[in-house]
Length: 455
Image 1 (cartoon, rainbow, N blue to C red):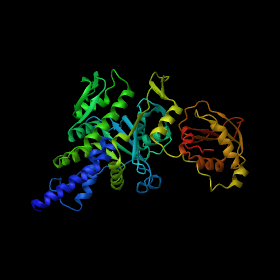
Image 2 (cartoon, rainbow, N blue to C red):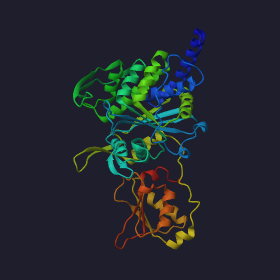
Image 3 (cartoon, one colour):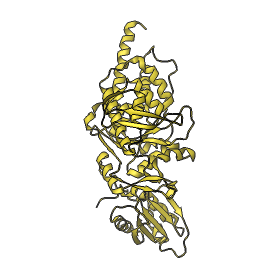
Image 4 (spheres, rainbow, N blue to C red):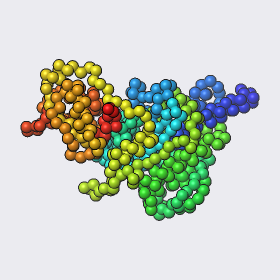
């Protein structure tokens, strides 16, 4: 390969990198290295690039991926939602880890728009199949309990149930990788609205250190950016969420205006090999890159589940948590994830003779704060010839997922309801009660309220 060819291929590589970097930042600055690798892997399949290592790092398309038929068709401009996960991994720790950062990112190829919704780690939610917990433990539980797809899959499902929207993909990064990746792009510039004074910032060795970041325009290296993103002392988790979004926007602004040095790419590849995991594949990344190039930075909507959409509470064990206001969260979700309301599909394969032969009495209970949900659902089921004998409110209004309780052994009716309401197997329960008021109890959760058919 002569010098002229190296120059031409180097310019091509630089153009490829600059083409895909915007989607890197749209998926969080944390996915930077992976996308660079994915792009260059495709590029080097057709041309030699002498500065790349002979055995580049392996891709990290691993756990947590949904079935292909359940994923959006990006080629048809269907909306995609990505869950960004930041874990507090220290050194060579093997885990499992809680998530310190959770951001739901949505990208709409049809309108070239995007939005970010930050989720506080102390939010008290239902982790499907495991009861009520802080949302930051979903990832931990998924790994500890051997959940299919591990921590990322259970975290995705938990957020899906909270918001009532599909969570298609995830990107996970550890904080050491985030710090190194920010350094690799030359740092970022952030307008710090309020000074950060934290004398109990984790030092990475199970101790504390002091952090001071003054107000005003600050150029941050990776270490400072991580401190700005993670500091809690003297501030709140809600403030952290806003700062994290500001960092991602600053990183995107930096990337869109910068000339990437090709000499930095091998370093970035090494970083991503240690730090980033995702279930996005190369084709999906490439498509998202094309969308990202068309998105104006100013058009990206940002929001956070914060003190205006939650209520503070203390659990019986003395743990402080944030209880979501379901209606307020739903309104916030609709601002960031605008789309026509889907409907629950009609049960096309139900054998109504079998339903009638079981004659299962169905009690419908509204487990949400959505007014009239049980009554409307009763009307819907009666039109489908189910025997609804009563409806009302459940014992509480914060059920994230719909639950079916089979009280007297009516397998066919139970399964047909599960298909209609898309109830997962772990949320179908069998119980015995003395003189039950009904044969099947259907407790409607927020997941159904989010897709309730409109009149």
